[in-house]
Structure formats: structure tokens, C-alpha cells
Image (cartoon, rainbow, N blue to C red; front, side, top):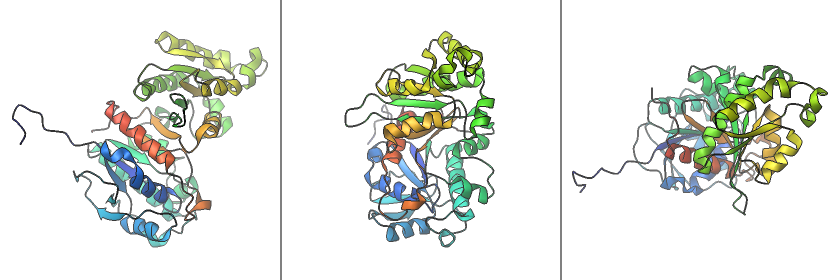
Length: 358
């Protein structure tokens, strides 16, 4: 019995997990994560997926764990355990028979998007503290009628915010084999062509991305981070010979970040910057466009990397890999990225990271 003078123990926060496109490896990764993650001891996990499709995945795809499936309401308070997947049925999708493994389809895109919408609604209503997403396929998403490039923009618009309000960050946790304390890379632009990204760059956008990165790294590292800002052009522009974006756009943002008390350096040539960061000189990097940040992080540790959305009033993390249509059902799906994404989400919630409640 709890004494009247004692505060009763609070339940663990709930985390809503989506599989991404059901035709890809997302359901496999989600099930493997559920069966092996230690996060059950820190959070109440919920998988947002169509139960029939999930059963089919567990029964027919190679390498799947033996798991029970139990449908639950979005506000079910019970804890989660490794052997039984607690599933929130998103409803409103075409059904498992319309999804062909390894194939792009409108049904797959609709299923992925609907799961995110339900997870978002659960977070907005206070039934979940964070969202962890599996990989979706942009062509399937568009075939389903969703005119968004990906999760980042989908969630920004659900929050009633413009796409630019959100930043995409890759978090590379420390290598368990003896790596350093982790590396965060935030992008000043989102999913768009290189031409569009460079045209969109602004000092205010770079500054906002740098502030978000520095703020997020504190709970992940447990201390103020050291930030580097990448140059746009090769060799940092060579004093204007290769372009003036460094002096005209990037340097003013770096100066404002430094004035805000952030330990920041830049603009630095990207070809050597990431080598220095990989050796522990920096904790975070502000990249100017998608591939400038994604390629080095995935080379350093693709299966450990986590995608985190910054700038929104909720916690959302994701795997850093794609749908893997070419390896569906072959027993090759690696859950490491989703396990890391789940761990990062729980750590952010435990640190009091913003959550959407209205």
C-alpha cells in the first residue's frame, strides 16, 4: 500500500513506433527491435500497424522472432514486454492483401502515412511521449496522394508549421566497440535538389539549425557541445574563387551562434571537417545540404545512425536507412538503427524534451 505522504510511482512514458512502408523491411526491423530492445524497462512501447499485416510478416518472412500480437487501445496503460507486441491498429488503410513485399504501391504509402498520422494524434492527445518511425518510400507516399518529401515535412505540416520550421538531424551514437561520445549532424536544408538547397540557404536558417543542434546535444551528451559549421563550396570557397556563400551567408550565422554562447567554429571545408569530427574534435556539425551530412555519417556508422527531427514541439526519431525493398524477407534486416532511435527517443523524453500536448 502506498502511504498518503508518498508519491505513487508514475508509469513509464509511452512511445509510438511505426513500421514505415509495410512492403519494405520496416515491419521486420520493428519486430526485431521489439524482441531485443532494453527500452521496455524505460518506456511503454506501442507499435502502430495493421495487426493482420504484422502477423503475415512474422509468419512468412525469414528470420522473424516468435512474437504474440495483441491489439490495444491508444490509451492502454499496461507496460510492454519483449514477447508480446502491443499493436494500435491505425485503420483506414487498404489492407495487407494490397501490399506486395518489395513493391512500390499506393497502398504501402497510404499505410505508412496513416500510421504516422495516428502516432501523431496519440502524441498530441498526450497518450504518447514520442514517435519512432520506420522507413517510408517517397514514391509510394506520392502515389498515395501525399505531397510531402518525407516524415520531417509531414510532421511539420501536422503541427501547423511550414517545412522550414523543422531541421533534419542525424545522430551517430558512440560505437560500443570503443568509439567516442557520439556525433550529431544537422542539415540547414531538407529533402530537395542541390540547386534548390543552395538557393534556399540563409544566415537565419543556418543559425536556427545550429541552435537546435546545440540544444539537442546537451541531453544526448550530458554537457554543452562543440559545434562546427560546414562551408558550402570546395575548400571553403578559396577566398571567393569558388563562390562567396561562405563570407556572405555562412560566416554571419557562425558569428551569431558564437555570440549566443555556443562553442562554434566555421565555416570549415567539409572534406576535412568530417574527418576532424570523426576523431572527436567536434560533437556536432551543421551541414548545408542533404548529402553533405548524410554521406559521411552513413560511412561512419549507417546501422547505428538515427534521424531526429528538430524544431517541432514533439520528440520524433527514426531509422537512418531506407525501405530495403531488395532484401525484404531474406533475413538480412538489421534493427540496430531502430534500437538506437528508440534509445534516443527515450533519452530525450527523460530529459524533458518538448512534447505536443494540445
